[in-house]
Image: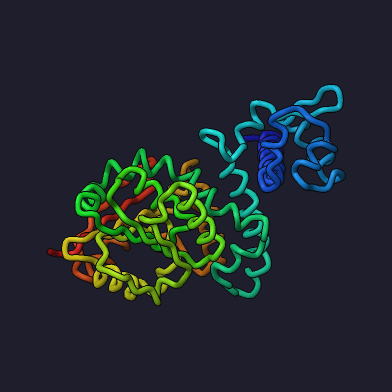
Length: 337
């Protein structure tokens, strides 16, 4: 590419970043829903309970980027803007939340690079407007993938359902994974553990709303102090293992010792590639970016072979399923009967 072409590419990327950050402001304040019907800035500000001055400037920017239309002093969400409504089918909300979170994490990385400090997962809670959207972001982004790619590859959930067994989700977020399971398997029970109180609050609220409180229980806490109330049929972890990999021996001993004989642990992780060159593939570039965020938190992404080996060290047999053009790995470890 010529230097002019490179400049044009970066200019387009800059506008894309601006558009997603603008969308996040609208998502965090419910503005795409407020403008589903045409209304004035003043009426929308009252409905959304936001400052009209801020809202007017947001509306002007949203109009510039095509999220809102304008006629006779009223704004209304466009077809593009509709796609950012959190309730929209195939919502683009995760992209906007990830953009805001990514900007925060890069700002932290820029400062921490000089000191080498890695403050841990607490950085995820440093922005009060972002944390409540972390669980919904994961649910909207990975819920369809769970149904399309994960459940067809794993038959253990049907077995648990047949005997009314229990699935424990370590790092459950807002409970989306367990809700998907109990919706699909009517006899299965679930327990979710997460380190953020906000996630547990959302998980409990959604379970009550959907009538699942008798089958789902959630608790805030640390994996390393977790003691199940009964032997576990299946553990699930979605993008959580790399957060506790610093003591993987303890984690995998917990998985093994807490499982019933023939029980399984279903680990879903990004599949870190074997070569540096692979990271230039469009599918893997976001993984490389996120791995810098993970470093701030004290983590790093894993190769599937590392997870298989950890299962082997506690006497569990493991098999790996790859999907998402090889960028996603589902590693299922089974305890001996």
